[in-house]
Length: 237
Image (cartoon, rainbow, N blue to C red; front, side):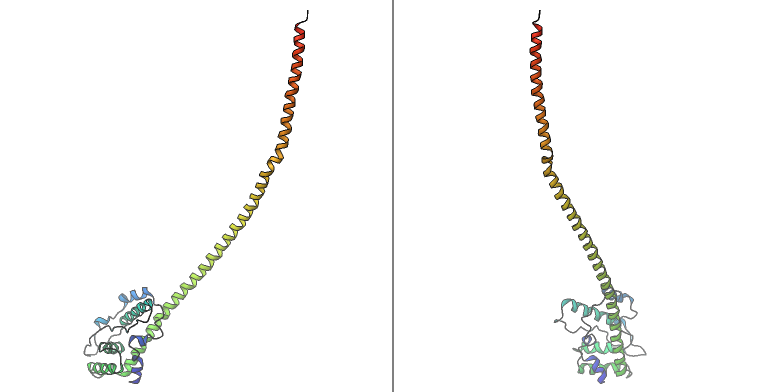
């Protein structure tokens, strides 16, 4: 009896999940459990000619102090636990019965045990309750651990992708910086070349313009002289 109380005195579902309620639980699994389970808590029947017991989903203990996401996940885990309910009267029926009386207190658990024992024709034992309670605990722990491993694998993959993306982008940034430096160097060179264009061509252009002016002046002088000669030739007898 003491062992039975030990497993159930910690506020019903809260006792089973103590130490686990901060763990994440896979939503996809929670949804699939609704359709994959072979036994449904709402339709469980007592086997071996046992008297049926009112099936009732116990209200989860208050989680007002827990963050909203943890509180919601705890409720989902309660739902999975109910879907895992085995045929017959066991730990979950005792727990639900006590919760229906106002909570899984030692006295309510004692009263529920007496009622369920009578309903089963005095075949229900403390050992059966403890064994089934331990079974449900291991089931939850196993499911959660499996989900954690999946999430850890996903996390590891994301970390690798993150590092790869950072490395790739860092290299691209460095390449662009190098290109920018090269372009900056080229720009400086072109600016210097632009500034030296006038120095290169202005003297040459000035020299040519001077020669042009000299040529025109000389030509004008020669033509004038030739014209004078022609005028004199025209006056010859």
